[in-house]
Length: 169
Ligand code: NI
Image (cartoon, rainbow, N blue to C red; front, side, top):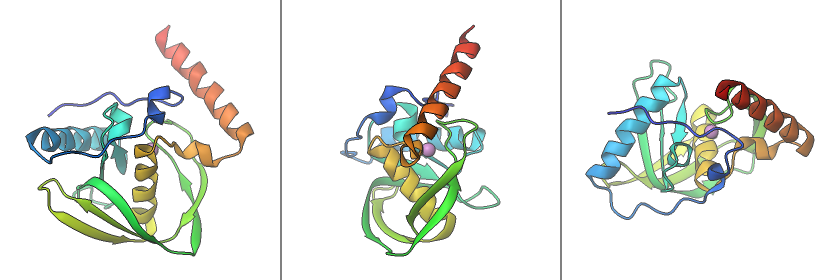
């Protein structure tokens, strides 16, 4: 297992649209294990392959308090979203230190493959629903700050670029 470097906004690679995983094999299982290790190390609740510069449709998450319920979703597809929406404060490992409100469907139903290649259906609400939608956005090349106003996004972009320049010094 290994920790993977996480891309930081506004890295243009975060806007890559991921391709479906062709076959769930040892390579994919090893990637899932590395992504989970990286997510736990960074104290995140979810991580999409896009964020570690792998552009295949795959994400990992764990929304449990105890951090002991890892889930791997491969080729996730949204099959249903509720009409009722909720606004929640979101953050992202690719947008460090930034938290802001995003409105999304409250509940979703998602079909995916697990790391064994078995088809699974998840009906999610609460944090799990938000997390799945946030990570699926990453696979479409979308970062949560794109839901915010242009002005807010510009401020976030310049703040993060400044922080990145200071790190490089
Ligand atoms: Ni994110």
